[in-house]
Length: 272
Image (cartoon, rainbow, N blue to C red; front, side, top):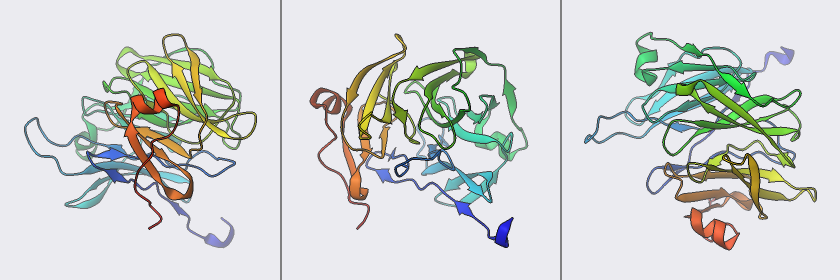
């Protein structure tokens, strides 16, 4: 390694009101993120109060590392199924799914606690519909509001097109690649509801837009033109967070964004 310089890349979470996490954006031209967006992990039984807990996937010298971050004890290292892991996401039942760059998937059925106890990862036998774009890798995954599916972006490592939306249903062993028009940035997909996902893209005029993909029809049903580096939604999809220009987080109801066709009006200034 030239110069023996140790490189460390992290993704930082920002908490908003009711535990909403905003994803991390990439500058133009975007490159694939070095780590997936932080994932909120359920750690308490029903009726108990849970401490803030995140899964953080980072790269150290180009090697991925997974950590469980808790406010009371700090960071605890967790094993990964493979060095090519690009995303780790928690499902609604507390299990974890890891997606590899080539589309393979692994399950940790008992979540972080199981990994800490030595439970390890189990390969998921996925049956694919559709094909990944040539030279594409999978990255940037988020869980659906019901916690049963994952949405991820697939594109070449250093180009924004060709790209596809990948939807994985681990329990059913299904995975689907939906071809996308335009160029896709390195931002996580955002679930708007059970059947619609929003993606930050770049149009032919090089300006960013929000593409709304309907999973039932497997097509883009709307394109909302506004400047954004990344887009995220709350767990139920009802609140949207936009990482806009000049490090501003814009927060508002998802329905307002879709009906008004513009980003939310207000939010904290991260540069302060």
